[in-house]
Length: 325
Length: 306
Image (cartoon, rainbow over all chains, first blue to last red; front, side, top):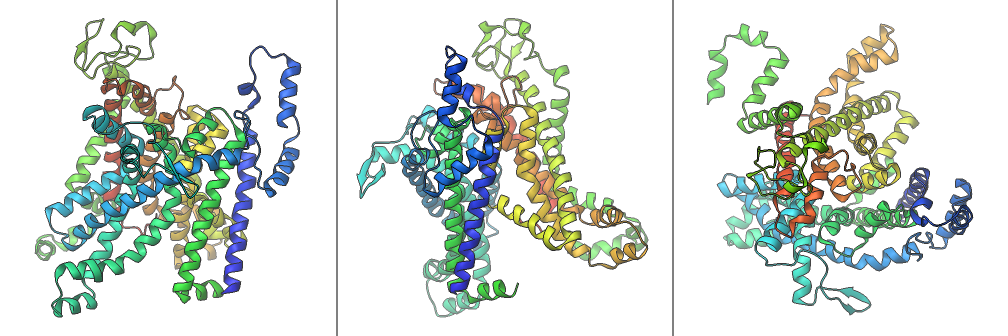
């Protein structure tokens, strides 16, 4: 087990290191940010000074070595635009994004699970077909389009919910959250629903497939023979068994929620790190782009690693196939 | 029930003459919804191709655009006299014309990136499966790494490096998509290369390239066709997303995504049509392609992993 953990850990570190190299050179090869940062009145000498201050005058491999040295100390450079540490900027915006992603994840389960269960247990009914059709739409609709429609319907048309921004935040145990006030929930409702849409479709599909499979199992037949009520069979016996794959997949999908929040945050003006990334891209603020990607990659790798470890702890076969291959 | 009567009704000779392609067409059109999707898609392509002929206005031609016409609601008459059935946008362009021209760009970007990604990805997958060993391992690790990251994020980062423009968007989309093809083609090529006909080709002394591309490749094409449809829809959606975010196509290449982005600022003040109608066109395009793709998947039934 220890060898397995170590090998997985080494793989994770390798992925992070590889991404570090790819992203740094990928972002730094094209475009010259210096022209985005200087004002038109600057003369040649001032431009050269700005470039020197930012370390942009040195050859790329030298920039990379400096970057590596600082990265090892947890410093991914200073934002060209804000003048602050890039990693600090991102970590500062991170709670808002995580909050949004978390609410979206909960929504995906709360909405997707009952619908998927119903569609799986009554596959022939009209409502089930309708649910499945909607879930196909959920997969093919572009996120930003759905966001626009949500704003148009609930904010412009009906005027029920605010279209942009985040509610007032309260600090709890050092974490800023807007989920403790009604206003905060009103603000988070639309963006979270928008972000959750893809995952709702995913949960519907998983729950449906799981329920269809579980309904034929002996333990369900046995529970029925024992005279248990339908709600208990579904709520306890079936649900317990289909939750394992769903929770696993959703755990893995959490990273993609964070990534997709770039789109949602832009539409709903949600002050998270996705919007920061977009601003950084339009202004060629390289350190912030690199730092964002690294934060997300570390998040991804950590989640994957945890899922792997939990899996191998639960299921020894995973370790065995790993050892023989 | 009908399945039991069918073989008796059709003489066995005729069944033998049915080519695989005919069989494919027959089972494809059995699904009404897929047929509808195909019809809708063909209509959209025709509209896009014929845009200069049927659009009431050329939205690129600044002489024909009048600022006085800006933000007119659907059905209003333009300064030149024609009716703007879908209204006009913020600078007075007829929205219907804008959508028709926008479809051209969106479809072109989707088709080009789809074909390029399919070609490159399939070739890489084939080579990985045929060569094997370290090369295969390295390629597949790269594929895994890329597929583990969400496509929106990869595309955003690529665009951050490449910049705006049709060619750059196509490059970014190809780089996002090639891995799907590589993985799928490698999967089926691994199965195919163990079959006798490959051994036969090799014993005949055919070159590696000929064995791979003329013998193995045709047998791996079924899943590729399915992914081409799904990924083209995905590429169109992704391009629209990037353009909407303002990092995709520039204003000089107004795809549907650019049109939607332009309308977004007017939406909160009630001019809903500027965003909604291009969005609807985008939706129709994506859904029609996906309907066809879904049916293709059922008919060709490849062991798809996505």
